[in-house]
Length: 89
Image 1 (cartoon, rainbow, N blue to C red):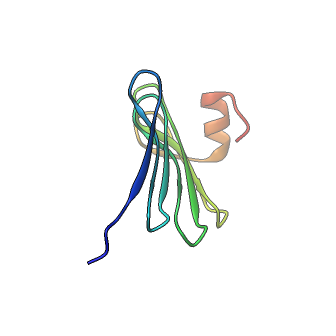
Image 2 (spheres, rainbow, N blue to C red):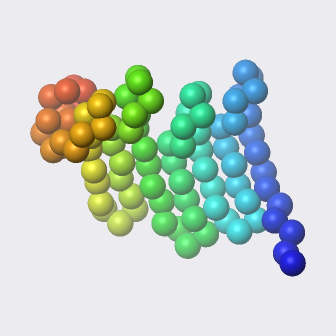
């Protein structure tokens, strides 16, 4: 059985901000403990954005796929996202 080693990094408040295991999986976290970036050992990556209530509002990956939601969790178009959040993601 293989021992899985890991690296963890924390901010000044003791919140985890980074995690990597010996299999090459990496996770980056925001100050609320939500994953904001993920990368596997094959180089595949995912990114996440959240609304102030903690719901995911934007997700995209290294394959060029993107999805958007309103703060209640309902799927929306990129144009609706830009209007709601005032960004051009």
